[in-house]
Every structure is written in C-alpha cells, then in structure tokens.
Amino acid sequence: MAEQTLVRPARIVEAIPFWQRRSVRRAATTIFATTVATIGAVVIMIPLLWMISTSLKTKFTALQLPPQWIPRPAHWENYPDALTFLPFHLFFRNTIMYATLTAFGETLSCSLVAYGFARLRAPGKNVLFLIVLGTLMLPYQVTMIPQYVLFKFLGWIDTWKPLIVPTFFGSAYLIFLLRQFYMSIHQDIVDAARIDGCSYFDIWWRIFLPLSRPALTAVALLSFMYHWNDYLGPLIYLSTTEKLPVSVGLANFTAAYGGTPWHWLMAASVTAVAPLVVIFFFMQRYFIQGIVITGVKG
Amino acid sequence: MSLNSLAFKVIPKGKLARREALWFYIFISPWIIGFLVFTLYPIIASAYFSLTIYDIVRPPRWTGAGNYIELIQDKLFWQSLKVTFYYTFLAVPLTTVAALSLAQLLNQRVPFLGVFRTIYYLPSIVTGVAVALLWQWILNPEFGLVNYLLYAVFGIRGPGWFFDKAWAIPSYVLMSLWGLGAPLIIYLAALQNVPTELYEAAELDGAGPWKRFRHITIPMISPVILFNVIVGIIGSFQVFTQIYVITNGRGGPNYASLVYVLYLFQNAFRNFRMGYASAQAWILFWVIFGLTILALRVSRGHVYYESPGDNI
Image (cartoon, rainbow over all chains, first blue to last red; front, side):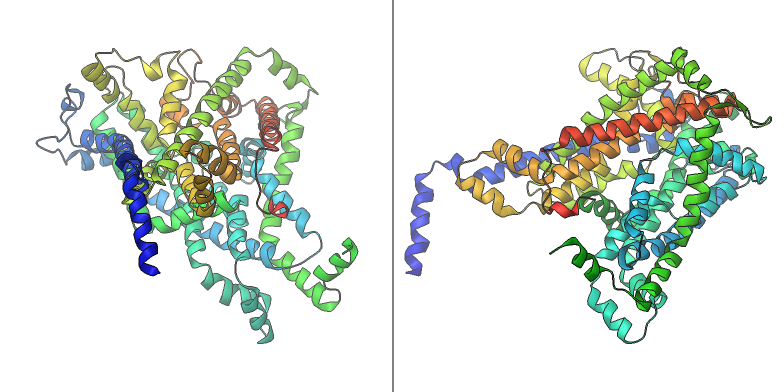
C-alpha cells in the first residue's frame, strides 16, 4: 500500500511539463523575490554608506564628481574636528541624560498604568481606557502651547524639566502597547499568587515585571530612541548652547560654521546615529516585537 | 444571557471588589495626574487661547472667533493646508503600497529573512535631524549622489529637489519612503499570521497568485492595513523636523514646503501669536479627526475582523 501511494504521484509529476511543476514555480518565485529584495536592500543601504564615505573625505574631495566611494586616505580626523567645532561632548551628555531618564520614567509609569488597565476591575475603567486611546489621536500641537505657558509660569523655560517631568506620568501609546502584553499573561499564575497572599502591588512587582521583561525592554527602547531623536521639544524649551541635545546641536552646525561643511556634517551625523544603530543591532528582537505588538494586535 | 447577569458575573461586589477598584485607581494614578495636568488642562486652555489674542507677556484679550476668521483669510494658512494634504496623499499611499509589496516579497520563503528585515528597518532607527542632513546632501542639485547617478547612468539632468518649488514636496516624500521599514515589519508579521490552509484550499480551487493575494491576503490583513494608514495619516499631518531643518524653519522655496505644523510653530514661537497658533492647532485636530473617521467609514465592510468583539 505504502509503496503504491508513493509511486503514483511521482508518475503524475512526470506528466506535468517541467516549468509548471509546483516545486519549480516555487523556486522561481523565491529566486525572483530574493533578487528584488536584494536590490531593495542595496538601495536602502546606499544613503547610509554614502554618509560614512563623505565623513571620511576632505572638504574638497567631498564635492568631487565622479565620487570616490572609498576615500583614500581616510580622513578620520574629521571626527574629532567636527565634534570639537561645537561642544558635542556636552550635547551627547545632555542627550544621553535626556533619553535615559525619559525611557526610565515612561517604562516605570506605563507599566504601572498598563497593569491597572489590563488586570484590575473597577467602575469607570472602560471609559478611562477609551480616553487613553482618544489621546492617541490628539496632536501634540494642541497641548503644546498651554504646556509652554504652564512651564513658563513655573520658571522651567531653558531647563530640561518640561521635557523630562511629563514622561513620568505615562504615554498613551506605550500604555496601550504594554496593556496588550499584560493581557496575555495567564490568570492562573495571578490566582495562585493571590491565594499565597500576594497583594496587587506584589503581583505587579514579582510576577508582571519579571514575566514581561521583553515587552518592557521594547517599551524602554522605543522611548529611548524617540527621545534621542526628539527635536521639536528641545527646540521649543532650550536656548543655552551648553544645554542643547545632539539633535539641535547638529541642526545648528551649518549656521555656526557659516556654510555647509559636508564632510564634518556627515561625521557629526554618523556619530549622532551610531549609538542607536549599535543598540538596534544588539536588541533588534525587542524593537521588532514592540512594533509588531501594537501593529498586529492593535 | 441578559446583560445584567453578565455584569454581575464580571464585577464582583463587596469589600474585595472595592479593594480591587482602589488598587486600580492607585496603579493608574500617574496617568490620571498626567492627563489632568498635561492634557486636559492644556486642551481647555488651548480652546480658550484660540478665542483670544495672546502673546504670553500680556494677559489674553478676548477676540471671539477673530482668530478663525483671520485664518480663513490667511493665504499662508491655506498654503500650509494644501502643502500638507499634498504631502500626505503622496506619502501615505506610496508608503503603503511599497511596504506591502516588499513584505509580500519577503514572505516568499526568501533566505536570510532576518538580515533583510534588519536592513529595511535600519533607516527607521535613524530619524530626525541626521536623516534630514543626509538627504539634503544626497539630493544636493550640484554635488548630490542622486543627480550624479541620474546623469551618469541615464543622462538625465536631475531637478533642484529641495530648492525647486515643484520638487520640494516630492523630495520629502522620497525621504519618508526611505523609512518604510516600520510598516514593512508590521505587514510582514501580519502576513506570517495568515493561516496557510487558506492558501492551500484556494490553490486547490485553482486560484492563481494574484487572486490569492487579492482575495485572501488583503482581506486577512485588512485591519493591519487600516491601522497603518491611519497612523500614517496622523504622522504625515504632523511632519515637521525634516522640513524645519532643511529649510531653516522657513518652509521654502516660496512657501512650497510650508507644512501645517511649521506655520503653526512660526506663529507660536517666532511671532508669539499664541492665540492664533492655538486656533491652528484646533483646526489640525479636527482635520485629523475627520480624516480618521473618513478612513474608518471608507474601510467599513472592507475590513475583516476575526473576532467581532475585539476591535479596540
């Protein structure tokens, strides 16, 4: 029996012309898809490679056409030169401080709030959660001006406080993301912990935080990345050069130089994005998970 | 089961329930405080400011609908609205089609999928000022890489890109397309969630690749497409950083890239017309709200939800 069923389909395959065979068509599709995907990947990478290439040229060879893809000699001194032209060591210190504190604040506050929304029952919960979702649609520009007036009244202009303090009160998007994750944790574990006498705080601290480490990492990374790149906030609130983050410092480069030194600008840009790229390479699993949780399960 | 008995089952009564509710409010208290101080108060204040003339230094002076009437007559306001609509309706469909096609392509048993995913996502990590500077350099009319390649390979004289009135917005769209990695990853995950039995059944019924894509893939991932389109519209309407950096905050040439938020920013923080800018912010809110509702309406009947109760 077994032999017969094995032989029969083989005869049918012989009868079908070579190019119409399923395995052949599948292989052809894969080869085509891989080719197009490779071309796409090269196109995507060219701007980044071009940024690195320009950062190693001189002011004049940067403008040379046809361009030199691999600059010889490589002018590594562009990096110290560009980064000392403006006080980038201060900008980096500020950005690291800003991105770290805000990522910490948002992860902490959002994990508390998301736990409440995901696992505790209370009157008014659904209405409050609809408000959370509603604020997702509210453009920052609506609240931007009264917030500025409020912080001016508090004397917080030209300090980092208006940019850091609000992050300790949660962000709708990240609350939503973490809630989705917390909903998937099994109730059995929670019930067992309740029977063992755990308080709700204990359950959050001893069960939800350890079990959701990947989701918390994703939230912290998304928050860190967002604030590392943030430009509008610092642009509105900060004016003293020593207090600026990398993003604003980078944007001010051209004006400070009085012209566009592309080789230096690219060197400074590479330095500004390198930490994020390195973090991404080591943590991409979490990045991708974080994006997918909101997008697919949303 | 009646709604009443259901409610009784879900919400336990008594001391324990009150305790749980108390803990709920303790846990969400950061959000409640933040919402009251940084969202609700600003919303009310902003609505009030939009009806006043306010420069921060002097107290607000009531003007009623004055700001809104002035906006209707403000040529730059209409220009900023036009530019933003143009940008959105170019960027969102192009990004959606490109990201979806690439995701579908990567879903064809492509080897080294992880490597491709990493490369495509990389530009989404690098956002903001550095990307603006990079593209300003790449699209430089004289020394930029793109115009050089256009000339060297095709013999075409490339346009002035950011410096050309007609090409300014398409240049920003091109730049935004570079960041299609984020929607791409979401689409790819959605495609991988489509049950393979559906494709196998359709193939047995004689459906070709296009029919399978059109009648299985698209309906199955339609909620994800809708989500991405709405997020894309909201994001595109708030585009700011790239244009501010590249045009030095002016939205040039000749206001060709004066997007909505840029004009709002100019009024608020350059001219200190906080009331006028607040009115702009409210109009922005209603435009985004209207477009979201429109997207939901248009998609109704075209979007397939697996479990009807799970649409939030």
